[in-house]
View 1 (spheres, rainbow, N blue to C red):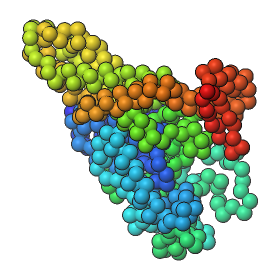
View 2 (cartoon, rainbow, N blue to C red):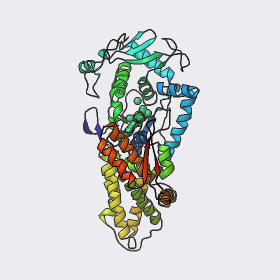
View 3 (spheres, rainbow, N blue to C red):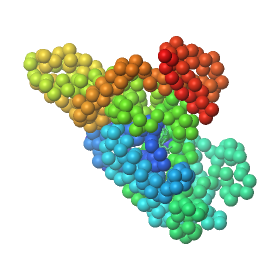
View 4 (cartoon, protein in one colour):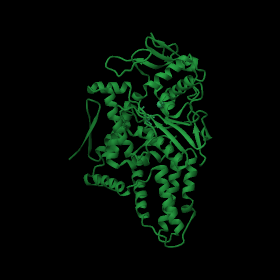
Length: 476
Ligand code: AMP
Ligand code: ZN
C-alpha cells in the first residue's frame, strides 16, 4: 500500500491519508442530477472522482466507491412536465445517457450507483433519527433541519451562523426557525413523484439523499468525500449536519473538492448558457481528448477553456497514442537504459501521491516518451519492460491511454480533415461568438466590436437574432 497526501478541506491542509480500516477506502462522490445531457463542466467532477478511484486502486487500496444519481429534483420535475413525461421515467432516460457519456470518458465503474427513488426508506429512517435526536422539527407536513441545534454547523465551509443570518434575507411567512434551516422532507404537489411518510405524502429535500446513500453503502463514517467546489456550501455542510445529527458520530474524515471548468472568466453552467455538452464534444474529437484536457491541470486549479487548451490536447493525445502504437513493436536491440525510463513509474506515483497531481505525473510521462523515442533502436530488455510498465500504469491509474489507440487517432484525424476541407474552423467561430456574448454581458463593447471586426476580416459575418442568439455566415 502506498501512502498519499490529500488536501483536506476540513482542515484546509494537506494531510497524510489514513483510512479508518487500513487498506480499505470508503469513498463517496456527489453525482449528477439527471434532467438533461451533461456538460463538460460536469465531466470535470466525474473524471476527478474517477481519478481518485483509479489512483487509490493502483496504490493497492480496496475502494468501495459510491456515486449517486439525483433522480428526484425540481429541475427534473419541471423538465418532465414541459415534455408531458413522467418525472421518474424522464430521469431514468437521462441516467442511461449519463452512463453513455461516462463510458465515452473511459470511467471505471463505481461500486454502487444508487438513485434517490430507490433509497426512500433509508431517507425516511434518517429523518426520523434526526427528529428523535431533537435536531429537526415538523411544520405542516414539512420537516426542517434545525441548524442552531448543531453547534458544528459551518465547520467545513468555515461559516458561522451569525454571519449567515446577516447574509440571508428573512423570508416573509417562513416556516423556518432560522434562515439557514433547510428542508429534509417536503409535501409533494399534485403530479409530482411522492412517497408515504410519517409526515404525509411527500418527497425528500436535496441534501438528505447523500447522507442516506452514504450510510447505506459505506456506514456511518467515510474516509473520503468529493464533489465540485460549489457543493461545499450548503450541500456538503448540510450532509455533515444531517449525518452527524442522526448517527452521533463523525461523518467523513477527508473532504476534497475539484475547481471549476471556466469558459472565459465564468463557470461553465447551464444557467449562464455557456455550456458544451459532453456528447457533442465527444462526437467531434472523442472522449480521450476531453479526459486529457480535464486531467491536464491539478484538480484544485481552475481550468480555463480556450482554443489553445483544446489544440494542445489534440496534439498531446496524438503523440501519446502514436507512441503507444509504436511501442507495441519495440524490441530490445542494445543496452540503453536511463533514469527517465526506469524511474518513470515511480516518479508518476510520487506525483499522484501528492494530492493526486495528474498534471505532474503526465509531465514525467512526456519526458519518458521523448527519451524512449530518441533511443528506440538501442533499448535494453529491462528498458523495454519499463516501457510496457509505464504504459500500463498510465492506462490504469490515469486512464489517459485508450485500449484502442487506432480509434483515438482516427477520430482526431477525421476532425482535422473536416477543418481543412471546408477551410472554416467552426470551433474558432463558436469560441469567439461565446467570448463576444460574455464581453457584451460585461459591457465590454470595445472587445465585442473587435471580435466582430476580426471575424469580418476572415469573411465571417455575424447576425444577432432577436432571441439573443448569434448566427454566422460566410461572405461569398
Ligand atoms: P449538478 O448536476 O449541477 O448538481 O452538478 C454535478 C456535479 O458537476 C457537481 O459536483 C458540480 O460541482 C459539478 N460541476 C457543475 N458545473 C461545473 C463546472 N463548470 N466545473 C466543474 N464542476 C462542475
Ligand atoms: Zn451530495
